[in-house]
Amino acid sequence: MSQEAGLTSAQSCRHHPQRPVAALCQKYGHGLCADCLENHPHCPDPDIFCRHRPQCIIHHQYKEALRSNRTNDQAQGSQP
Ligand SMILES: [Zn+2]
Image (cartoon, rainbow, N blue to C red; front, side):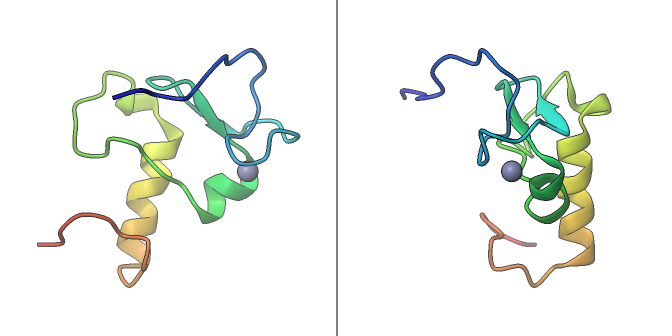
């Protein structure tokens, strides 16, 4: 159960440390750049309550991606 998040000093993309973030997961403190947010939005806990969710851009984009592209191979878990 160890998160290797480490220090989150600067707000940079989780996958592209050199890019500025376009959206930030306030629960886990990791950010996504505009490119990642557009193409690979990922909410760590899409089904668990998150008090930041109402204003979370990542989760919004995540749900939009699921709706618009249901054949995405990245889908994890079970689909009803
Ligand atoms: Zn990125």
